Image (cartoon, rainbow, N blue to C red; front, side):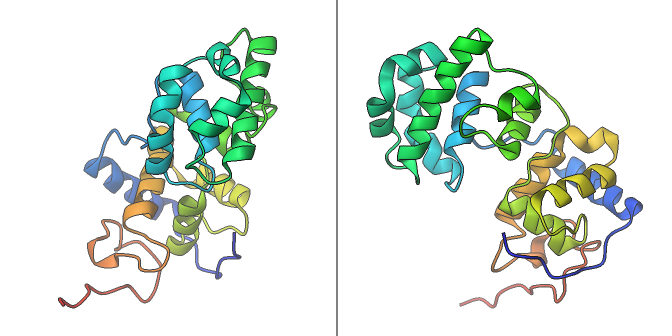
Length: 224
């Protein structure tokens, strides 16, 4: 990720106002990956690295019909998994990781997805971001998964400036009121995906623009 421009940091009251606004707009935000259970969620998140959720959902529809469990995935084998996910970027390596992590879940965890970060991060293809997504969505833990969208929003707005994803994650943990922690991850990612876009942020329709430190704000595009 590129080093962010240095910006001022919002204070705690401003941060609270931002999350209060997010909550008013969408009290129960949801992720956009399709999954059936904890295992398929884990697989979907592993496959989503450097890929769109829509693209992953298209590929996993058939994959999860055939293999909704670690045992079924291992039975498919690497070759068939690879064929099913070949429309996703970096699919060969991801297919190998999905097979390997499925085998480890069978061998070491009774076929169940562990509910702790250390065990999750020990699985092939699972880093801190992936572990945080699974812990947040399935196990309802107040974790924050910093992807490119969240990294951009944290820096651009002044909500949680940081030079690395971990720095942004730790800064957000200090900024976000406890009552908003569970859903903060989704609010920020969806905001970055649909409004605070990388090249052309849509500031004219941003619900938190009054607190955002990004300047100059992008105006409403002229009609063609």
